[in-house]
Image 1 (cartoon, rainbow, N blue to C red):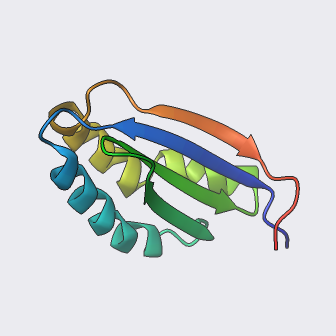
Image 2 (image 1 turned 120 degrees about the horizontal axis):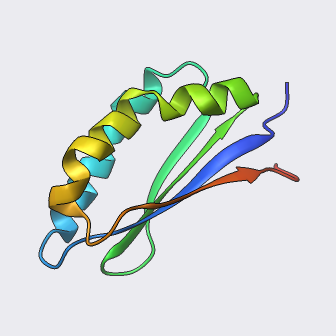
Length: 98
């Protein structure tokens, strides 16, 4: 089955919280591994205080299950301490991949 669905999330760290957000995202990999419907999961840094997550799913049901998963729960718990504002989370439909 092809990867057709995803999320792109951008996260802005509070001043002085950049390394903590980096560490939080790095630890999120183990949570993503435990989500069978999350087929790929990337955490990345855009600039000094902007980070992102990009993940993909084969089905809309898998994408929706991710919203109820451990990563989103952890972001809800730790986000207020780490983030300058609410995360900008956008569902995306994948057009092509290699």
